[in-house]
Each structure stands twice: as C-alpha cells, then as structure tokens.
Length: 123
Image (cartoon, rainbow, N blue to C red; front, side, top):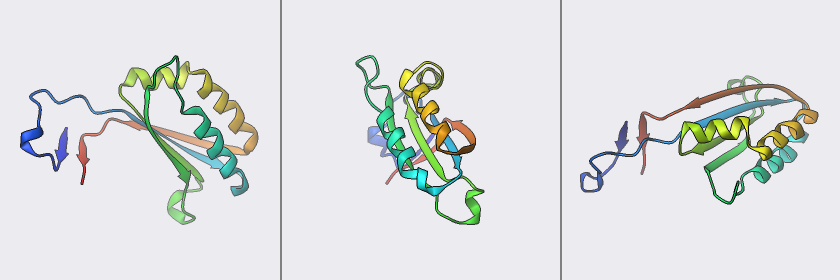
C-alpha cells in the first residue's frame, strides 16, 4: 500500500491494513425516491451490538450525465476488515431491512463493487 503524502516521522514499522470499501450503485425508476432512499440508508449507520463497526459512509445521488450509465444513487461504506463488510452484507439486521425498504422504491438494478485500496492520497 502506498500512502501519499505521509511524513516519514509518522510511519510505523508495520502499517495497518487498509479498510475495505463496498460501493453499491443503485438504479431507481424515479428521482423522487432518492431522498427517501438516502434517509433509509442514513438510518442504517448506527451502533450494532453496542459497538460501531462501520467506519464511514458517503451516499448521494449521481450527477445527471451519460457517465452514470443510469445509476441514480451511490453509497460508499468503509469497514475495518473484510469480515466486518461480509457481516454487514449477510447478517446485519438493519442492512437486511434496508434492502427490503428499497425494493418498493422502484429499484431497477444494482451493481456492487468492493475494494481494498493500494494507493491512498491524503492532503
């Protein structure tokens, strides 16, 4: 993993593993459902079993141009480990409820990608 810039005085001999970032791309039938979808997503990111395991969340509508390929909403979550990410995806009750709530909002399609960064640039 490459961190840039990262002062050499702050480097540790064994850097921690970078977090995992799953990013779902949702295709909703109508933009009127975007704010309701974002509210549902926001309600999921709370403490689970008394401890936080979702490190961060960024979600919002895509910009209206040809590059979005019809996807109208993107969410990027940050987890400390791949195990936490899979727990969220398969076992977290709030996430399972979110999936159920989004379906009647005209969810036409979804694409999910996840990655572990190899390059991180921080100002």
